[in-house]
Image (cartoon, rainbow over all chains, first blue to last red; front, side, top):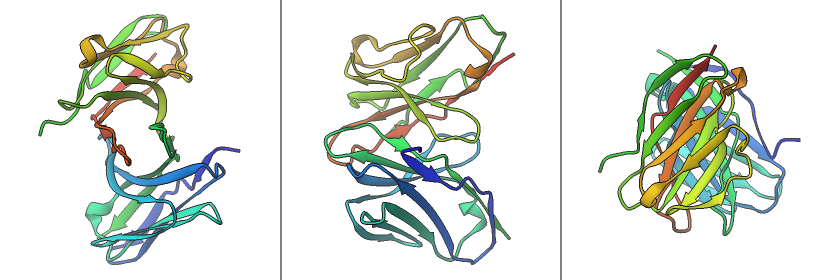
Length: 111
Length: 114
């Protein structure tokens, strides 16, 4: 079993839809949970991070962490064609700088 | 603020040849990472430097891959000899540290081994 599992997609949605992206993990030591966005032929860029459990909102993006279920989510409201990219979840434990990435979910928002 | 720079952006070589990639991190970032991202997969950490010392190289195939970070700034990653399965994007990232330790990624070098 991989430490971090993520559905690779692709996921196609119409413009304006609410998008839900998810990852599950097996290592209970993970404390930091990140979402990176990667456009084609570019490096990943950090979208949001959450420490431990709970929700965090930033504009159209909401990150949720449920440590009891070992499940994290990223919601995108009012999705735009410019949101079309691959979304990578990443996790690390407290006291370590090592990130474990999911495989990434490819999202396409249709105009 | 300038981002992480990498070169070359693309490289095509034949198997058994050697290749080197270069990375210049964000100024002041003590920690530097090299990742391998195979098509359809997430980045996998190859090696992590703290200044010019190696912190983690547990997933670096040391029989063919080597990396160095002279003077704690620029870094090079070398593959010798290359295999077909080394075809991937090689990403360099750097970070300042701190609790969240945000990693900033360069654009990557896309390597094709024929």
